[in-house]
Length: 330
Image (cartoon, rainbow, N blue to C red; front, side):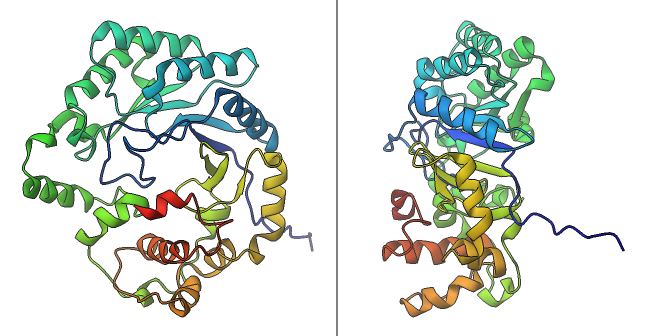
């Protein structure tokens, strides 16, 4: 019989987001990273270029890099300098750059910046548009960025999250608090948001809740180990693509390729990643209860996981895997 090769427990990282800053003009209820106007962690250009190159070299398949935040357009000069520097270093251009378009105040400005990014190798522009962002950003700025983007880059290179809202939405800052909350809840039930970070605290309560036992035998290995997608925080902390607040390692302390090899070798023995990958959040629940956690009802396994981790982080447990600390404090 032919030899069967066991699947790799940890996939190579072939898509990575560099969080250039935790600053954002908005403080959206849906933000799973808890970014906002009061945060100011920035990724230096030198570090970003070095980690970009390490990511590309760490995987045999290469790594597509996108630029995100917070709001990367909050420091335009740093953003364009990074894109130009990466191109000069021979790196593949940014797969996409994400923005809420708060800066899109005039057509000439939008056209000029997108042309510069295009020349610097940007693949796509990704615009955030939804009821949460429109509490802070006039929707006409999103529409202007999308329209001019399609003219400069072509329609295939402009993505909007979400296009249905861009077409039909409005400024939710004009609503009173109750009407805005009700709209958030209607939109939330479409299942598009990640129940981590600020979103877990502000939005999860609007969803149908279940006892922790409802999430038994649901492993998190696909999200933590096999998704191929990670985010790098400004300080180099490496997080799984959709699991805010979990650290797989820290770039800058050692090469990213070595961080991946260590995770591949010892993930099962790690105090947080190991149990979650094997058995989902219920595998961490027992330790949390031992340390005073009182289970409630939860909107999803991610919501349960977040609340367990937030409790453990509040006790300063597993600091090498639960961070950054400010994310859990909000």
